[in-house]
Structure formats: C-alpha cells, structure tokens
Image 1 (cartoon, rainbow, N blue to C red):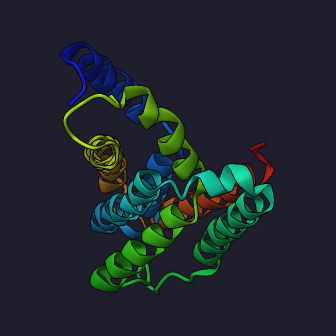
Image 2: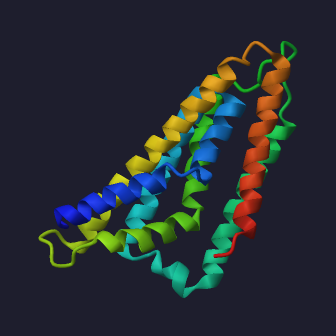
Image 3: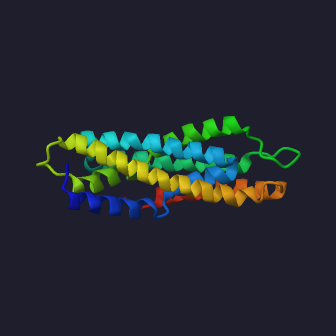
Length: 210
C-alpha cells in the first residue's frame, strides 16, 4: 500500500473535495426538496452505486478514452445534461393533489429517484475524469498490491466519502422542508425549487468546458 504520509494526504484531500458543494450534493438536495427525505437518501445511494462504474473504469483504464476521443466525452456530457434538464422539467410539470401534497407516492418516488440518480452518475464524464486524474496521484507503483487493486481501494474510499457528504446534504434539506410540510403552497414551491436546481445543473454541465 502507499506510505502513511501519502495516505494522510489522500484522506485530507478527499475530505476537502467531498464536502465542497458539487453537482451530486445539489442533485440529492433537489430530490429531497421535490420528493422527500427518503427519496433524497435513495438518490444518494444511486449516486454512490453509479460512482463504482467510474471506479472500475479508472481501474481498467477506460477513462483514458475520454481523453483520446473528445467527441465521445462531449456526447456523454450532453446526454447527461439533457437528462438532468428533462428530470427538472418533469418536476415542474408534476401536479399536486387537492390537499396540496405532492403527487408521488413515497415508495414509488424513492425507487424512481434511485434509478434516475444511477443514470445521472453513470452519464457524468466529469466523475470519470476526476477519478482518472486524482487517484493516480496516490498510487504507489512499487507497493505490494497491484496498481489496479490500489485504484479500486482508493476509489471506493473516495466514493464513500463523497456519499457521506451527499447524505449530510439530504438531511439538511430534509430538516428545512420538514418545517414546511403542512403548507401545500410551500410544498409546491419546494417541488419547483428542486426542478429548478436540476435544470440549472443540466445547463451548467452542458455549457461547462471540458
């Protein structure tokens, strides 16, 4: 394994990156605002599982394709951006029931949030680039464990730490909407706010330079 000094630097750097607000945290918060805390938690789980696709890609070197074929990177980025915008527009178009409560049943919305978040994370080429650029800085080619296994272990730690930040964000958003739950107008406002966040994320991803 890498040296102790290298591991300390790895954990410190990962913690800083993890708790800087980013697209995953905003996505989980948007799901919480629109569909409730349970949907936010399942969205965080979906993001976490989707992240392992990028860990495996980094371990096998597949992320190099995004550097070698810029058109592929652009295509995946645009597909992911359009998907985020579509999710946001769907929240805007969703109607509320007569009593002001959100129309999506808790279990159904949580399941939907899970699959949507897996798709969002898998379609995020920025995550693949991050793993491919960040993890090699802490790989020790002379260590006992092979390089691919170091990628998997360190990538898993990164994924877990980032997911902890997403969960914290979900609970903060959940605490905020819990106070507004009795107001049908406030619920509708939170639903629209969640949709606006998703649309904004999609536009940001689409316009962001690679």
